[in-house]
Length: 320
Image (cartoon, rainbow, N blue to C red; front, side, top):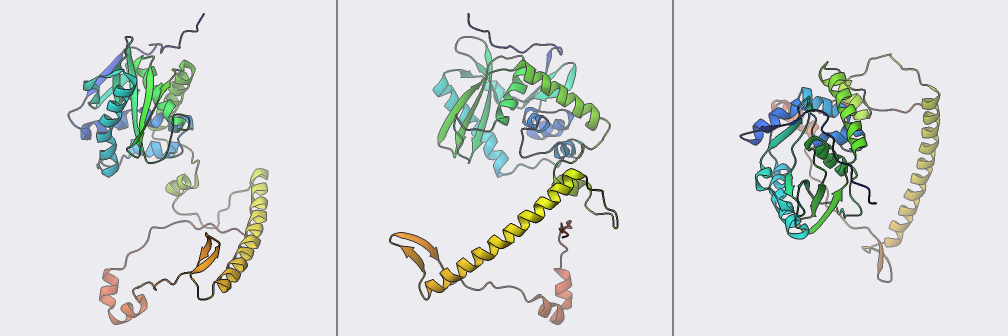
């Protein structure tokens, strides 16, 4: 007997629908919930955002500004949806192209905006996540966090059929079906609740998990303060010293080899082995640069007018 597919369980009340007049309104409302594009951050599958960065996007969001990427992605959703409808057969619900947020009645901080909803050929409804990418992802090789987005939407909407479709460089079309996972959705609910009530509501920053997080939270160091390194960090320090020494030796060897190859080039453009070009050593024009010292001396007023201070940073130095 075939095993029935797991179907979302409506245990958090009805699904609440909210519509918007324009993208600006929709964007402004995003700080009120965790959406499908953000759930992978809390599940640890998103390589492009940390919990701290997600936290900041909620408590101090950047103003809405459409750029070439967001505009292209929004407009090309129709192309991806049309490809999917033509190849797979399920009918795209045209009204689902509008910016609509669906949230859980008893957990309004858990919400999503499906790219498209579907009328399935055999009856029932489905969800379609539309993607466009410059990276060559296929139906056998694609980011795993895409599936988290769809499972999250399926759980919220109470829909048991989900799909991801994408265009690679505007030409190659791929799609996959995503099987609903109730246990995974339960984990997502738990993660969102912990984040929302543990960080967003009390305005408490998450712990940093990258050096960029640390820099954002602590742009300036405290002079003469040193944290104590534990055994694990001491082992990492010793390993870094060891790796650095090997890299120095390899860099010295590489420079010596490059020097020998340059000498072998002589007046020629490079070296070749039959039809296989091994290296080139071409003449490049020198860069034209402003003589800052001369400008400061001869025209100090102009120098000061256009003098800008770079963004501060913390320089890492390894002590041997």
